[in-house]
Length: 335
Image (tube, rainbow, N blue to C red):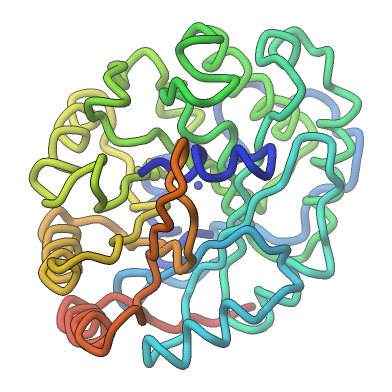
């Protein structure tokens, strides 16, 4: 299930793990690359993602619709999972200011902030043409002033037809142009504390668009962040839900892959699905996964889907055992 379909109610909707930052430097691409930077119009970020330590294992994250200051999801997930999340993902609508204090709070408490920037009420073509540069410069300056890392996902699930920036409304070329422009504005301001996370939805029957036309290029991307859910529509096995998309991506990018949003819906097979997801992700070599630990109505219906790891003792036990078995969840320093 695509989380942005759920987020439509919020007028919504992918650093991640401090774990793979050393790969960013090796592969290139963080805020310093992509396009030649112009004169800085704001103070350069004090934090550089290249200074982050090498991770000890695969990242484990949690995502919900709350702001960075609403820390309850982290506390609850830590208590249930038996380990604190390394990543705290949240959503921010276009035009919103960056919450410097909230993100600093997360980083100081051991969570890498990941902001999914949602282009609500704005066209990608306008962004690409520079019509939103005043906001972008302000946002870049606010993020640069934050003394910590940020994983930034822009216009996630761009291949999803349910989004106003998806295939039914916007061409892939417009998405690529908008992504590059956002990146270039940040680069021109010497923002060094951002990891750029490209986050398509997995290719499935509801999201058939090919991924390659949406890829901005290696110079503009640090991590690939796939989104996909085990449920009545998206799939019930890693091999059918994620593997086809991973194969597509491998044909044009070698960037580290993070499962940026996922969950397992409540069903008689939830324990088996949790085991399959964690095993499949580990075997696929992803750098981590971010869990949507909430309940939400299935889009277009009144069916309530429960993605939480604690829907039953069996589900919780499966999550705790398998996440430990495959090394999901590690601590990292914040400075």
